[in-house]
Structures are given as structure tokens and as C-alpha cells.
Image (cartoon, rainbow, N blue to C red; front, side, top):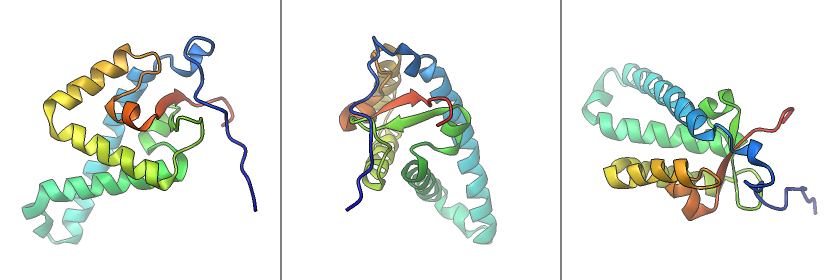
Length: 151
């Protein structure tokens, strides 16, 4: 049986504030990059479906967005936008996201984007909590942190 060493917990925001510095801004910029990528993937899907996908555009955007987020978060604990901004999601124990947590986080994100009040609450929480956690992060015990140099 093989074991993998992981951190004992998320970095402490008081003792190690560098892990959370600038995270809300980086998170927003990563969101913009990811939104542009998802739009590009949807355009490709529309072309591949000969335009038929246009009749199901909201569902197409949802499916493509979920697939993109789950695949990238499960692979490296960061979407491509997050990786460009040098941030990543970590579980409560400090480890990278597993596929189930990546799926749950993506579903929580999609649910909060569906309604205005949860999205506003999530943004406010990212600005005021010590670990800069959004609504899905608080529910799942995850946090976005600055990636350590060389990681």
C-alpha cells in the first residue's frame, strides 16, 4: 500500500498570510480567463454540432463549464486560469482536490452562479474571511491559496 505525504492542514492565515495575499483579485482574473476559455470551447461545440447546439446554448454552456472545471480541478487542483494566476484550491487537510471534491466544488459553483444572492454572498465572503473562502469553499472546507514557489 502506497501513501502520499500531505500537509497537516490549510496554511494559517495569521502565521502564513502570504498564502492568501491577493487571492480575491487573482481569483477574479482566473474567472475571466476561464470564462473566455469556456466560451471558446462552446464555439467549438457549436461548430461540431453544425449549429444545432445553439438551440440548447444554456445547457451547452453549463455542461462544457462543468466538464472543464471538474477535469482541471481534479487533475491539478486548479483550472487553467487559476494556474496562470498561480493559485490553487486545497482541501481542509491541505491536500489537492480529489475528483469527488472537484465535482462537488464545481456543482456548488454552478449552483451559486444560478442565483444572484448566493453569488453576492460568495464574493463578500471571499473579501472578508481570513482564508478568502467563497460559499462553496466554506461548505466543503476548501480554500484558494497562492501556489508555493516551485510547486
